[in-house]
Image 1 (spheres, helix red, strand yellow):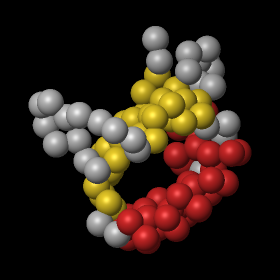
Image 2 (spheres, rainbow, N blue to C red; image 1 turned 90 degrees about the horizontal axis):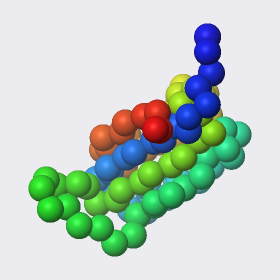
Image 3 (spheres, helix red, strand yellow; image 1 turned 45 degrees about the vertical axis):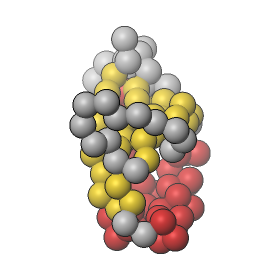
Image 4 (tube, rainbow, N blue to C red; image 1 turned 180 degrees about the vertical axis):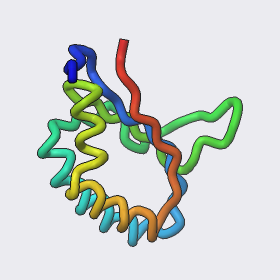
Length: 99
């Protein structure tokens, strides 16, 4: 398999049903994000959705490569956190290769 020299990104739009419970997901995902070198470019904050509803929270996470972005998502650490996230929110997530 060829490893990309382009960065990888997670782009997520999240609707949070239980903000207090969602904090458990944030605590749990830290292990995976640290292990795979995740860098948050946007995490919550002010936003505008001029065309469609975009969720309560938008997140953009950068990884050193597309492969690292995929590996993080598929890791046991993140899959554990994902189970928690699904208890407290719904999300649309894309994993993309940069230009």
